[in-house]
Amino acid sequence: MPDLHQLASSAESGGGASTPEQIAEEESVDLEQVETARQWLGDHDPAQRIAGAQQLAAYPTPEAGRYLLVALRQDRVGEVRAAAAESLGYFDQPALPVYDALITALRDPEEAVRFNAFSALQTLMDKLVDQPRLLARLQAKLKQTLKSKKLPADSRVAVDSYLQDQSP
Image 1 (cartoon, helix red, strand yellow):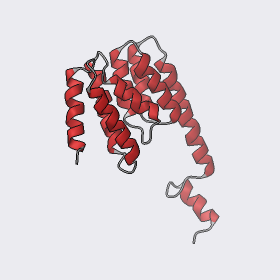
Image 2 (cartoon, rainbow, N blue to C red):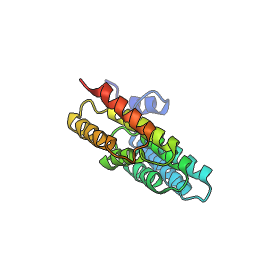
Image 3 (cartoon, helix red, strand yellow):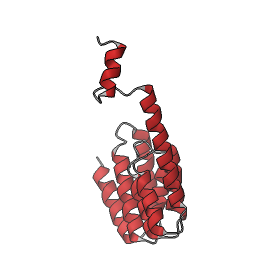
């Protein structure tokens, strides 16, 4: 078994586990990147807001998720909402409001937002094989959404097809 000196040498050479200091520094950098992306989401330039949403995909933290939810729900530019929806698809275990917001986004007036929301939702739901209750709840919400007259045809077809594929 290697001693601490060997482990430290291995870590310094890039061949071992991270030290507590390295982990703390990585977490600090992550926080800085999330904060930078949050600032970009508040910029007047839609291209900068899109970049902020895309950057948050690389840092799928609860805080990043909250920022993306605000962008998905409230940004006036469809491309920004679409980028936020897409980025949410990179989260491993998002909070329940993420699923709800993506389902709601299936009724967005912009096709790109609806497409990205459905794609993200499908990706996230495909990861729920070990959470059958949550998966069943979300599938029930999608079935209920199909009944809405406000659901655009493209979303209706995508959701219906997905649910049929999931049926035993």
